[in-house]
Image (cartoon, rainbow, N blue to C red; front, side, top):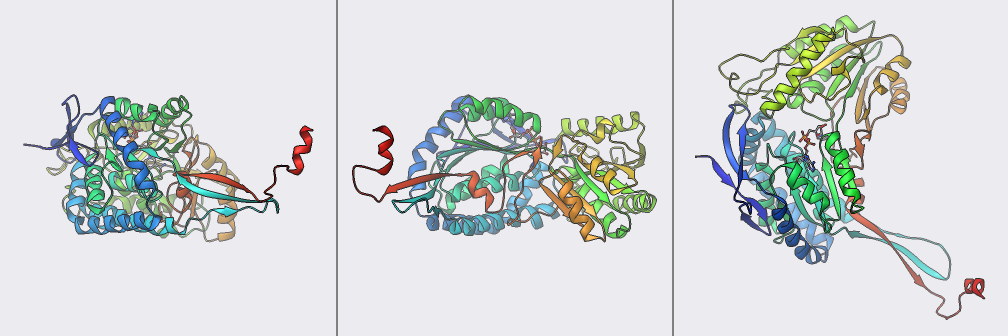
Length: 493
Ligand code: NAD
């Protein structure tokens, strides 16, 4: 019988008011892995009330006290490393090799980072005149809603939760419907670490009901959202009704540019990592490859050869490096893009099919897929696929490469592979994206800001910049004249 999870509200596991549940499917087997509460607006309201009650006392603690809760949480995560890694592998399909060695340790490290970063937060004193003292202070926003995607179930919530918690906010998390379990466990662990009841709440259920109820709720001060651009647009619209700020980390269609004279071996290795890590289900995944004409043949051969070595299969096997896609409908959508690429005339160089082995037959697998002879006009080169499917384009000049890279509605990330760092830096300045890597793709640190431009969203996660996202800057002015008449009162006389 599948394990049943409630929502986590006010420090307690609770069923949905309706009593309804939803299935969490293991994407490697297609079988039901667990049942989660299918909440609705009434459950959101209950969570908001719990958070509103808990918020003042949490905001009233010193940053040092909150920081200690995060450090303890980080330790609890590592003490439960294998349990959390297995849970994430089961609900998401990410290989255990990755969840054990990457997602869980990084989640723990990020809580440590936020615990330290917030303690260095400062306000300012502003020298506006000798007759006053003028200063800024940073205050928590109150109750914040955090809506997260399924592609890194633990990390995507930690990026927001760590920053929101340490700055003194009470949080209501709406985790992804296809993979809500890791988030629920993290909320329970936060309570064990010392977060008071109501400070971390998780309401599971569909985005259209639970997510929208959270966005519309008048007592929620801000929405931190990571997900699809279409959903982000809907959230912006709904949030405008209560003039609620929203942080939007949205989709990407990221360029990978190989310049004349680049180190092809290094670029090919970086391409495999950038395109196929997490089965390509990464907002910053390399998906549009622009290769200088002098290296196009050599790069394509080396890239295909290296990608062919990727071992996909049972994600619970430590030897597996590529798991299934996270859910059936997503696999079908990725396959539609493969079909569209073929119809548009792209040349299939690798993959393009479902692997058919006893291990993968029932799961939602798509083999690493590389198309050559592509152009930006092909639909699959413009829309976010969010799977292991990429296209290669040949270019002649640096100007052409920059203009091809910028020919997208997204602006999340890009990489430039070159031995000429000056050229790389000049090009990086011309590419419209939140992050540009030179001779690397897809490396993110706690210390470096993350966030896009154009239809990839706005606002920052990670780095000290995220602390601004979850605090309000208040200006306080203190009169030092100490007399009823001020010089400027003359304007009214
Ligand atoms: P999604 O937009 O479908 O869902 C994200 C979350 O929003 C889920 O919890 C979902 O239930 C909820 N949601 C759905 N509809 C909603 C609505 N109308 N109102 C409120 N909430 C709603 O995205 P996804 O498929 O889970 O994730 C994949 C997307 O996330 C990709 O586009 C990817 O690029 C993006 N992403 C971006 C970043 C980044 O940092 N920019 C990081 C990871 C993923």
